[in-house]
Structures are given as structure tokens and as C-alpha cells.
Image (cartoon, rainbow, N blue to C red; front, side, top):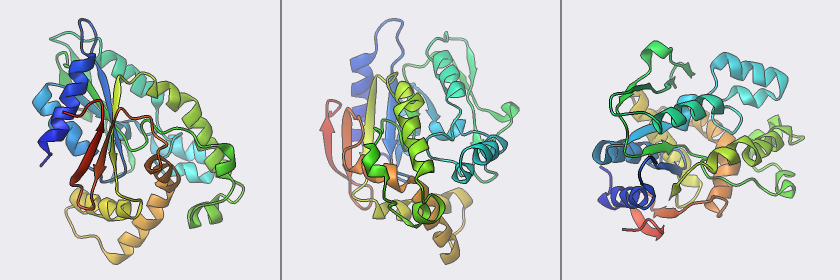
Length: 266
């Protein structure tokens, strides 16, 4: 269940930015498992909005394999900046903000279990003109780090698989480039702030159990622990203030709201 205060915060941001011929674009960011997808879905349902996830526009498995071969092997793993089709996202967002009451808009979809984009015939379709568009994604609004901060690895993944820092520099360049340009199109951004990065693995494990419908084994949790290391650097940076957010929702260990800071506070 979504805390009503979060829906009120989204509604307040929409009201602040909606006007004739302008469909607001509201971003929802937060670490994996923080509840951003649940919030986006409930807000879309109750506030007559369209919702899309940054996860829906991952590059295909073949495209990521090509990127891994050309740039760095770690780009085979989806998630970090550089592994999304931002042109597809831009086309979809633009269309959602321009459609009329009777229009049908296909929304890209990604199958996380198959680790590949769904065929277009399986994409969901949004019907009509939304009051607002809600875009959710873990890294939305993240600011690039100072190059000096990239020098030392922060976990075993970076130490063992990116010893020269090429992968993290490429990610940082993407944040400063194409992703920064995407972020400038947001009318507002809500950041669901985890209490610390240690909670992310717990939340990601819960997310996995919900996705598969089965308990997560110890070996699978170890795999997830390695997986979240791909997100650790940017996640820690965002938790330390490296995110351009209009509203910051400080969460407790159980995703309960401790405090809401910012202009969208109801």
C-alpha cells in the first residue's frame, strides 16, 4: 500500500506544473526496491497519468553485448547509465505529451527474467491523453561525480573488473551528457531516499522474490549482492546529495516515511 502522503506529493507537483497544452513530466527516483514503481503505478491509477519506467527502455541483450565488446565488458549488465535506449525513451515521452483523447500510445516493455526487450506486439498501450507522465528509474536526476572521485574502486566489482576505471568514467560521462539532457526535460523529480546503501540489497532481494514468486536462496542472494555492486557508486553518490530533486522522501528500513522535504510536501 502506498502512503497517501506520497500520492499527495505527486499530485501537488502535477498541479504546480500543469497548464493548457502542457502535460507535466514528473520523475520518481530511488534505489532498487525503494517503492518507486509501486508509487508510480498507484499515482498513475488515481491521478489519471501515464507511467513509464527507465527499465522499459534498456538496450536489447544483443545491443548490450555489442556495447560490451566495443567499450567495456561490464556494459553487458543492464542498469547503469549507458545501457538504455534514450532515443526510444525520448520518442515515447514526446508522444505521450502530445497525444489527443482518442490516441493509442504503445509503451516499451522489458522482460527482466529473459533479460531482453519484449517484442513490440507485447508492449502495453496507453489510451487517451494523460494528465501527466510519470517516469521512474533508480538513477534519475543523479549528478556526475568529480573525476577525482572515480580514481579508487569502491567495491570488489570495480577492483576486479574495472581496475583502470574505464567503465566508471564512461558511466560518469554519460551522466554528464545524454542523461543530463534527459533530466532537464523533467518538470519535477521526487527522490525516495533509502536510509543507507546496506538496505538496497535487502530491498532488491524482496523485489526478486516478488518477481519470481519464490523465496530467494542464499546462493541467489550472493548473486544479487554482486549485481547491486553495479549500482553502488551512483546510489551512494545520490544518497550523499548527488541528485537534483524537488522533493526528498526520507525512508526508514521498512520503507516507512520518516520525513518529506521539498516543494511538493502536502
